[in-house]
Amino acid sequence: MAPAPLATGVGVANLPNQRHKIVAKRGANFTIMVCGESGLGKTTFINTLFTTSIKDHKNPLRRHHKQLDKTVEIEITKAELEEKMFKVNLTVIDTPGFGDYINNKDSWLPVIEFLDDQHESYMRQEQQPSRQKINDLRVHVCLYFIRPTGHTLTPLDIEVMKRLGTRVNLIPVIAKADTLTPRDLADFKRKLREVIAAQNIQIYSCPIESEDESTTTRNRTIMSAMPFSIIGSTQDVTTADGRTVKGREYSWGVAEVENEEHCDFKKLRSLLVRTHMLDLVSTTEEMHYENYRRGQMETRKFGDPKVKKLNNPKFKEEEDNLRKKFTEQVKQEENRFRHWEQQLIAERDRLNKDLEDKHAQIKNLEGELDGLYQAQGRNTTRR
Image 1: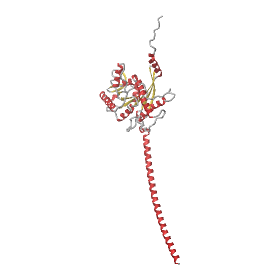
Image 2: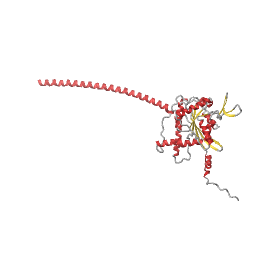
Image 3: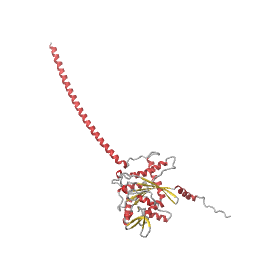
């Protein structure tokens, strides 16, 4: 009987296999936020990215029927994806109403507050005695959709991206890339890169260097496409050579979603899902969450609640109206008090004058009385 082969080492090298089994059994959580103006294809892109109907399309006729509210909402959609026995709990955060108004002042506050609130919620749950069921909605990546104008970023885009870049992994995306020619698209990308660098906007950058040369080349190729130009479509169309692909059909031909000559959809999908999802999650936990936690721990004691700033634009107009109404009431009361003061002064002057008249009358009477006394005294002396 031949002796059994001896195992080399003590088995430490099996730790990655054990970790793989644990992760495969537990699954993963991934939260993605889409931010940008209405009509840029955010819902279509999410459904195209995960090849399933995760979000329902809104009725275009009712897209602006809440214009009078002038509020930016936070819309949360959850889905469970499974591929090769591995489950991912996906959460999609949408921001309907953002950038849809003439006056967009402070329209980013609900988005920023939501990001901070998720860090705050996670930090508070970590401080509890039991931490087994933590509800984690920290956003791992934010896709900021840019309108394909061909010019540059708008002031609103710059202001919002500056604030987002310090709180979340920010990835700028050029929506509806099939509306620009290849030359215009290349010029637009160059302008966006220049503005992002000049304004010091922090955007996500995946690790480039790797021990594998092919991985390094792939990472450089992906990052060279930033900001990503995308085409979103869930419809199957037939190309001129008979292929059935996802894309959009025009009179001049077909714009293919997964054709790298037409857009950067495949590169963006690879960055988000296939190659760097774990890095997005790790960066959120190790950098953005830790930055928030450190900042809060420096400014308040352990266990103290977060101080809320009452500057939500949802109540801004109501607050202004109340302040204006209060100011008008104060002015009315001041005018009424001044009128009363003038009446009191006039009444005081009248009473003082009457008092002086009475004093004068009394002095006259005293003088007459003294005269009578003196006359009576002289008469008594003569007798």
